[in-house]
Length: 214
Image (cartoon, rainbow, N blue to C red; front, top):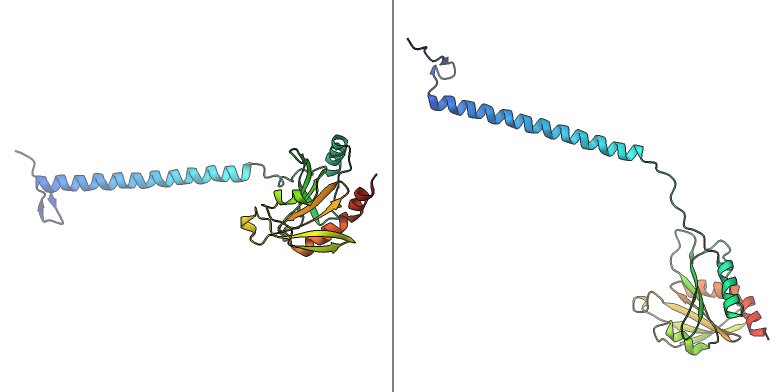
């Protein structure tokens, strides 16, 4: 005698074969879903652990400080090469040097790029000393712009270049230049006229020395 199928309480009768198959399929699906969720949680925990190791185990150290440029040392090499004095600005804590180099070409130029040392100050000024040149050289650095005015700083006459739209002039909005003996000295960049004039005035003793050199 065959064993009678058990009565399901919810149905009040034995399950049909289709109902049994559907119940087993639903149970299998629920099991697989719970396994997937547990696997996902485990993977997340592993990821968090790896990130924590990276954050706390890797040495943090101090921020890398940019190497200080030895302007005086480079200038000494320039003077030896050109057999002529090279202008070196006094930084006085306000300025830092971002670059300093002797540039070759039809006109050899000693150029120093200065920027404010303070984080809350913006802009830059390039100091360019063009050897054996005059004011006709300056437009080459100023997108072809000619002087628009003159001003007097430190007892010297300076050409003024109001460039206007800085975006059309390599971020250069203002420049001044003066003759220094056989050389032409140009200050150009994105700082204000007052800031540029202050730097120019600090260079006057060196410019006078160049002008008075035999």
